[in-house]
Image (cartoon, rainbow, N blue to C red; front, side, top):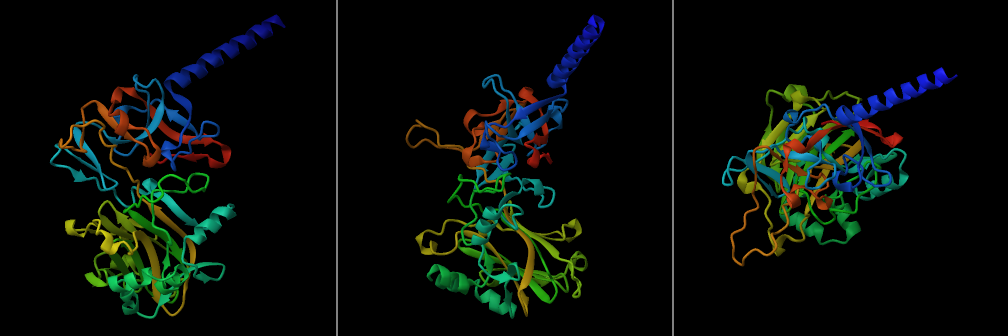
Length: 426
């Protein structure tokens, strides 16, 4: 019996040593304590996501926008953030986007690939919300209440001219002055009622409280609908003072673009048009991804890279604050409709936004009249870290770049709580 106990104790000691060795050198369990990485990681001291950290990952394998766990000596704590600079460059947070370059005067907007960066999309609205009736009701309250069967549908116009008329500034001003219910009826689009802001749906399908009234310009729509009988799909982004409208001809695959009802790009077929065309008799739902990302509009059919279409905005087309004269125009929103004889039923819909990184807080105590630059230099051997929930995150905007030597590992899996177990994309 004593021999058996000695063997059991030896096994327990060896197992404990092995476990502690693995935790120290291979992998570690880490509880996300705050909401700074919402919605990718749910943070709470009581029931935050339990993350598996790969300690075998090496810092030189990091790329821009990767997640990492760091433990700077100055803080004494471990924290998970997103790496936005790997050092040796200047960066600036401007208009919610990241600019980077070799010098303060040579900064370029960092443009993400619309499809490769799907994991960086932040969900703002979803329908349906399976198993969450409260969230589903809230989501439908954000959409113009046009119904087709049991769910929302894409409202129909008889012609493209009828739709373009509603994109002109005078008509948008007229509609904006109506009472709320009359405004919804007059707009005739499936549209978000409230501007797309820096709020989000977290991992528990609940809407955040942070970020209200902070409009995000890079927004998009992922919608699946029944295409039978649809001649053209109309996708619209309102960004005061402009209304941008994309036309997609399902029969030919041609795409056109207009701004405030005036053509910017006439419908035309290109090399990908054949791949984009939808068979008139198709019964299977069509999935469309559309939006504005890092200064360019994009469109994709059925998630296929061979159907990806992009159009970069010209410098003079970026929205600027038009002042009180345009305050009644929609601040920021997205809408959709079809040219067809009937409403097109929707299978699912998600409104998403890009990560919105606010500029660093103003320097306190700066001499009056001193020139201020929001660009920051990230030295070689350092990384600049940001939280995804920029409105509520303490990161390099406050404490500056951190040594890359403080890299602990890469979060790879969310191990719990059980209903939310998932693999992390990067």
